[in-house]
Length: 112
Image (cartoon, rainbow, N blue to C red):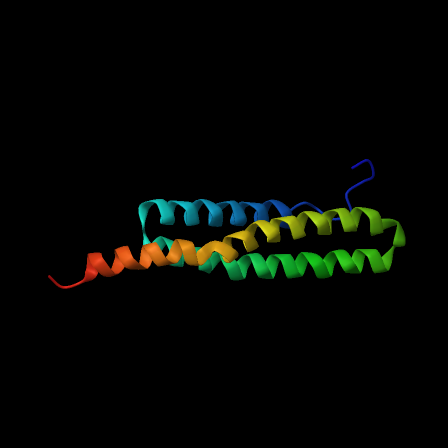
């Protein structure tokens, strides 16, 4: 970006880190058939939603205050949207992660 940043890049790296962690944990849970790890991924979901929502409202307010901020704010909104899509891809396929994990968990905890 050529112009000064309208919003400090605090939320974006945080959202990206959470999404990256969610994807990594989901893959690890699937590979290791770890139901507890698969369930723990969902804990980060609300945090990502909250940060994305706060970021959205803040960027909209920047656009309302000064129309010169619109282009940059739209670019930043696109970044948050793409991070959300990555996270959404996990949600779309999470049953594939949970079902094997649940089966392993049931087998591991079943009385002998």
